[in-house]
Length: 414
Image (cartoon, rainbow, N blue to C red; front, side, top):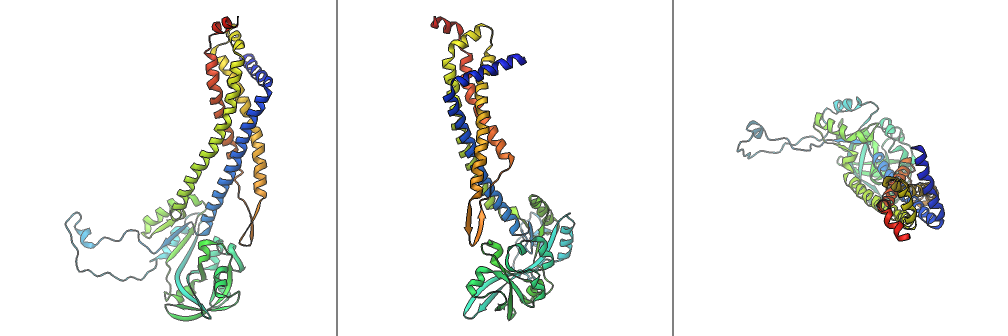
């Protein structure tokens, strides 16, 4: 069995060596296809992973807010389920916003190993400097807890999060907002809220281009409670968990237990994630088409080999080679071409990744490189897809060669 396999591989190799030009062209086709598959997939998947990480890091993985997804049913409807009930003349009850028994919710979230729980209060103020005014959503935070999340501290261009604790009336705003108001670090701004007017001091500036994070101002939690006239009130709890992809399941469990709306980062970014899925389908379709086109070179080489070796095929059949043996010879040619092409493509892919990774772009004053996905998974996908296409491309002419009648060939040659 081993001797027969060695004989089949030796014959396949000799056929390829005799047709050097076509062999080189076929190998080059597979190599270019695999190389560009790796470059394109590394670019697309890398940018996608970077985008998803930005979504994950931009805010807590789970946000519990003082909202109820479904309104509570009227007592009459509960008392007479399925009955023809009509409720008239009721008045809506005004309730104070905020999470009731939020400490209990926080304790339940802290019971998750490795989680970080950050209560906060959001509101709105209008900042004034001279004749300029800007409406701003503010979020009251606890710096000691917020530092563990890192989403604010890591994005500060100037100042520290802890400065909110040491400065009376401190506020952190974005650099864009500071430019529009014409203020900088240490400047005083007027703030109008529901309780009146007061002054705040800029103690930190968020770097430009931070999206949703830079759209808010950050103050001390008790400062936010004072500005919004809601002492001891919390209207949001942010939760960060060790495994971000488990956030959806944890959020559903917390919402079922406490009734308040718990949104995971997947739910908040559902539209973007659906768009990324569509983008992946398009990307893999395009790069797979590149590999499919490259396999036509293998089909051409094997087909020409079948035509040129018709007499050899007849002789092999007459000395006892079976149809399966003949198929193996020509399929082996395709596999050898694909293996060499994959190795060349891997080298080309690494070179293209190195070139792409070295490119630098100036984005709002920050020099950044293109994020690339260099994981072995992409190399295995490219190699596996190429080998699959090569086997199919070689099997089609090999099947035709195996069905040739040796008597007809030898009679025609004679």
